[in-house]
Amino acid sequence: MTLLTVENYIDGAYAPAASGGWLTCEDPYAAAPWGRMPRSGPEDVDRAVAAARRAFTAGPWARMTAPQRGAQLHRIAEAIAAHAEELARIESRDNGKTYREMLGQLKRVPEWYRFYGGLCDKINGAVLPTEKPEMMNYTRYEPLGVIGMITPWNSPLMLLSWKLAPALAAGNVAVVKPSEYTSASALRFAEILTEEAGLPAGVLNVVTGLGAEAGAALTAHPDVAKVAFTGGIGGGRAAYMAAAANLRPASLELGGKSPNIIFADADLEQAARGVVSGIFGSGGQSCVAGSRALVHRSVHDALVARMAELTGKIRLGDPMEDSTDIGPVANRAQYDRIMTCIGWAKEDGATCVTGGAALADPKGGAALFVAPTIFTGVAPKDRIAQEEVFGPVLAVLPFDTEEEAIAIANDSAFGLGAGIWTRDVARVHRVAARIEAGTIWVNSYKGGSHISPFGGYKQSGIGREGGIEMIHDYLQVKSIWLNL
Ligand code: NAD
Image (tube, rainbow, N blue to C red; front, side, top):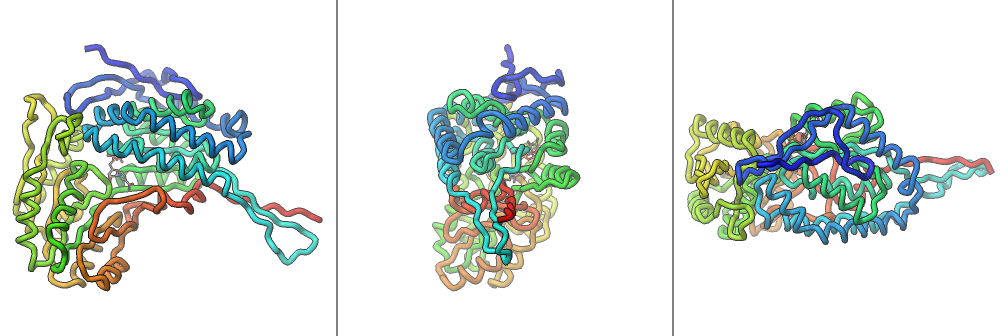
């Protein structure tokens, strides 16, 4: 089989890498390689950062007025909308998630560029009434420069856009190091934005490679003004430390172990459906996967039975088929991780209600599938209750009082999201205020919007993405004094 070759995208064109090494692009459902991409090193990152710097300091991007930049972001939105199906197919082929899910994400992505594009001409400084009558003082908001963006494989272009849309709106330029499992969509995306939407060359550059190589070179680059990272704790910590060594800011969107808390007065059918889709939608490969269910003891058995029944109806198979709910696990490393976590739960004495094992590839091939799995009898300190699995595994923990539910929910290094299921309005507000998490859903789970801030407490991250204020994370303010 001939493998396609993809190249880095630098300064408005595909460019052969200096490194000379290659990584394989895999299709997890076909369980076969389809292409190869550069295993870039520091020299390639240097080239991309230099191109971005040039675009930032000279050329059409640097000269664009704010309204022109806004119009540019709107053209980007239209180009993405026109290519949503094509980009979703690339993503689904590379990460094994359903085409339906990836297309749903890509259909929402243009909204981010429209929203932040609309803010371009609304970022204004002020004339400040200082105590010095002989001086005029005013402020200007200016972009930071080259933003080094590192993205994961689970929702590649959506998570890239959460950074890129506000960064561009603020006038910055970007070098992106996408996940080594899903780089193809970012390359095609950069080509579409540059060649079809007219983004000037060098404003968006994409360098493929490994986290510890190209990713580390990008986060440590002295000309990178800010690091914007989405991924796991290990990579996030490394990216944060690299930025700190250069005294640069970093935003981190990291993992989670998000709880759904089901009180005795909840609508149990609604809760069962919400918890099951909150963990098994996306095959658990979502940062906000509701991977813990804290259930009031009085409704525990009934809820678990209903969740098991709903879980049994989940269809695994070809990610391109409309009837498929969950595709294969994205890659071997992730599959090994999920199986290790399932092993921990069993060793620690949890009861496996459903799943708990790998499933054969339904087409007889070598694709890796894991059955949606529910464990009960989990204690708060068990590894399956503490560690992010990033796979289709739900840990169910009983509780007796509201106080205990809050304590278990907060007994986690993470703090990304939480769901509260109850009909008691006063309890909603009490509990929502005390849960240590960046997003709380009540009688629902996982909704979001470009208009609302998203991010983590504790080790789930630093900073927020989405919302108006967030554009200031990509700006710096200058104070100008004028002697009258
Ligand atoms: P990962 O951390 O393995 O990789 C993410 C990116 O970081 C990749 O591009 C990788 O190459 C890069 N990277 C790894 N080590 C690096 C280093 N030392 N220096 C620089 N870059 C490095 O994560 P993943 O497996 O791709 O994604 C899954 C993780 O991402 C999960 O923990 C998930 O919860 C998290 N995630 C968080 C959010 C959020 O918004 N909070 C969204 C999606 C995924």
